[in-house]
Image (cartoon, rainbow, N blue to C red; front, side):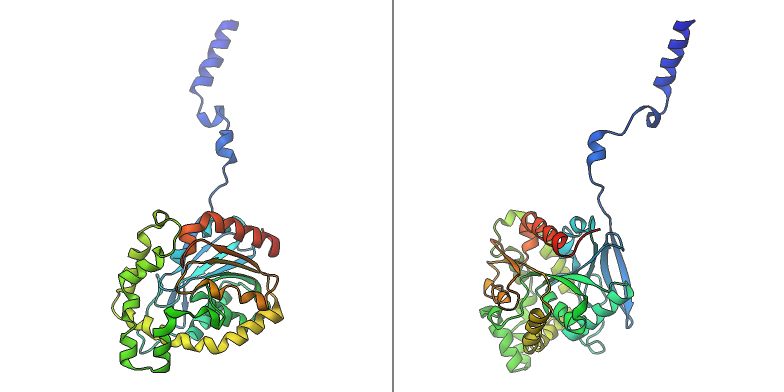
Length: 322
């Protein structure tokens, strides 16, 4: 009888569902669950604005503001790393990425308009305080936003984003010529800046290891640049960039008076926003943490493994985490 009972018990154990007979693997249980990124749209003044969002909505907000000629796509690898601790919001400006690109005859493509739209988006999402990661065009967009609501900026992460005259080097000479003479000839002279060669250059020049850079980057960006009408949108923005320079003293005053905790992570080989634009921040933000990296313009593509720990450590210390 005992043997019969034992045999029935063993048979039941073999036939039982695995969920009842096996505990979860310790190795699997130890792996941190990835945080999904959601791809959403908001409507602002009749324009659909695309944004990526990840992390718990009750966590501190980190706003990621992209540069030219890319979109929130540039943050696709950083977002999941931040989202385990933070509520991450990464929008595309109109004319970029997956946002609408309305006709320039009815939509003014200006940095002031972009800052206003980002302000509206953050209001719709209930973000009343945020750390800002600013890069390239993201710097004047973010700093204009900071002038509107200085009390809302909990911290700054600056990556090849300019706020000082020293940062406008030789690359900007033909653009400055367009600023001083807003002629069609000067405008057309900048057309090469939206070509595939220059887009690829921005991703590959000065990188520590080009094998780290996915060709998908320039293929993705160039496809969007080549949309009908987009060239003129970009040329409008090159011209409007002149309106940021007179605001540099206001940006610098914001740095001095508000003293937001600041992390500077700068690709030293960038010819567009060279290293000369990084160090002047210390005049107004003497407590800023600065790291000059051996990389180029789109540093996250090359140095994510170095930058992410610096960024996360900085945010954890200065902003806190969920």
